[in-house]
Length: 337
Length: 285
Image (cartoon, rainbow over all chains, first blue to last red):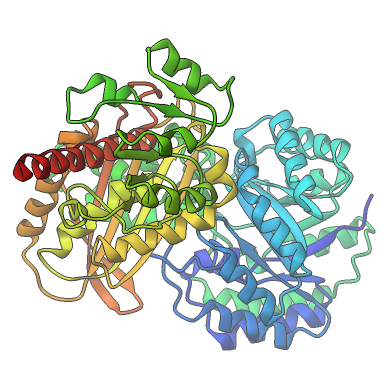
């Protein structure tokens, strides 16, 4: 089995779970530990990518560029990555992040829309960045479509393409089909990003490795959108047991997860009804807190909003539809909004 | 083309020009008995009877076309993101720009959302506005896909200029759902002072009504609501307006409301300008 490259995205995916409230001090402390532990890549940005501080996605409490700067200054060996979603971010923010000193940009789009990434892959390459393509909501499309889209990204200059299970809706056979197909069709690396809505984040990541995945993601204590991700420290422990030598120090990660990350959580990340219904309906994980807000405001249930959002085939970036759905459900019940 | 042929307005369709003699669009025009040219802009410039030109090429091409059109005394309705002339939205500022030689239609999302921001702003100042323009993937052409930055910049800038918001963001979403979704837009308008909610709602409903006179499929999805949101400026009331645009189905499928609102707005601009030209002529007699 490959020795995978591990990207910790506590400081990006986890940003959703704490309502975009990271402080420079928190970023510094977490980056320091991840770097000391030997995690090779650390992702830092708004949860929805560069320039994601909006009403739609949630405003950041602190300037994202400042947080990235702290990360770049703190990391001695780890590379700093940021997420970039075309339309939320523009070339301007990509250039700013490159100037601050990120090494990797992960360009994310819904998994049928790869052709909007061309200008950004080309720019990222001009800026000397390593590039990763993120095919979000990969559960919605069969392997053949993902291959087609991944090949577009490869042609634009991606160094790696990820199968991203944004909704935590894939089971192991689905991961196997998709990752294997990409491995076969591409000459660049392939990655896998998991969410834990069905309790499969670690299991699916291992399946991806069995299928040849070169890069995998995790978050400390699973701190990520919705049901969270594969736990970085658990992944490392499991890989150690499997005799896959990542060279990452488990003890430092366990301490960081327990002492630095767990205290940040608004509540423990577990597979409760909200997260299970979200994953089961195939809904983008970062919708969770927005759905809770709407459910409370309009007097309807989280699970029923999730179900309807799934039926409407919503994708990343469509938080505005949550209100539309909640209002419709409320008026069907005769609740006055 | 289909809108001019369908409506009995102030314009006559004289010529459809393209650059490819075998293009589908030119073939359709010929089928309808309309004169065509595949020599780009040249034949348009030669015809002194043509007063109004709809340019649906690309930003780059329009930058080249604009000075030529001006020189030949044509009124250019720019449907590209070139933005050579001022932004216009028929319900907001068209009458201020009838003496211009070139006006720009912003973007589909801009035509749909900037008047809604304007409607709030005319009642109470909008400090920050954010618009989300969601369209079916199938209705988004390669031009937009290769230059998302341009859509974002142009639309956000129009949310400030036309809408009146002090700070603005615009975010496009391309959704591939099957069957395809209608164009939907959301506007968040953050307000920093106390205001009369019902006056805002009334203003928004009234402008939506006016828009639906030239874009028949334009409607609000429900009554605008006021939600309190955490913002960098504190916890503030935010007017949330949701809108849907169903296309007329003249040529594009009905889900492509984003394309329909551009052609319908262009038609409206052309028609009002034509009426203006005719009245000036009448007045001169």
